[in-house]
Length: 271
Image 1 (tube, helix red, strand yellow):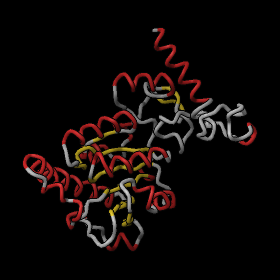
Image 2 (cartoon, rainbow, N blue to C red):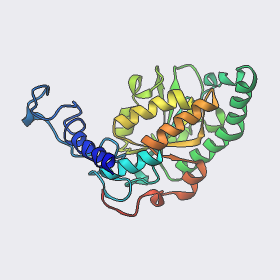
Image 3 (cartoon, rainbow, N blue to C red):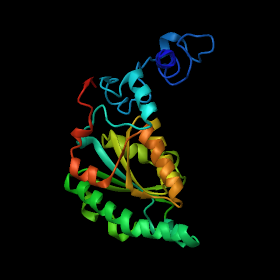
Image 4 (cartoon, rainbow, N blue to C red):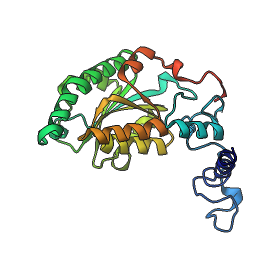
C-alpha cells in the first residue's frame, strides 16, 4: 500500500512538473526551467492519457489519472479508451509495398513464417479493414518507404477516393514516418484524432510510426493481426508495448465494433 501511495504521489508530481510544462521537464519558473513561468503552459493532463490532446484529461473510470496509470501498469495493457470519435479516425497502412516483402526470403522458418502470415493473415485482414474505412468514408493513408515502388495490388489505393482526397499515398525516407514525410500535415489537415496502424514491420516501421503518432498526441490503436514482422518474437514484443502505451485490437474487433463506442470506459465522467 505504501508503494502504491508513493507511485501516485510521484505521478502527481510528474503532471505538474515534467509532463505539464510545455514538455520541458522542469517545474514552471524553476532555476533550471528554460522559460519564465508566465510564458509556460501547464496542460494538467497526463501524457499517458491517449486522448490527451483532443479532449480534457479524462476523469473517472479504471484507467484515468494516476490511479489508472497504476492499474494499467499492473495489468500491462489498456482495456478501455477514455473516448473516441469514429469520424475523426484514419487507417494508416505502413509499407505494404512490393519492395518490403523481402523478409519472406529469409532462410528456414523465419521466411516461411513471414510468407504465410503475410499471405494468409495480414493481406486478408487489410482487405477487410480497407473495405470498412472506405464504406464509412474515412481517411486511408498509405505510407511507402521511398518512391518508385507499388502498394500491393490487393489493397491498392482507389483512384476515385484519391481524387476525393480520402486516400493518400505518402512517401517517407525513414522508419518512422513523422521524421521524413508529410504524414502529420495530412492527418491534421483532415482533422484526424485517432490512427489505426497496420503493416510492416511491426517492430520497425510500424512501431516507430506509432511512437511518432503517440508523441504527437494522436490516439494510437494497433491492429495486431494486420501487422507482420521479420521475426514472430519481435512482433509479439511490439504488441505488448502498444497494449500498454496505446491500444491493441484485432481486425474482427475493429470491423464488428464500429463505431467503437464499446471500447470506451463507461465510468469516465469527463473527457
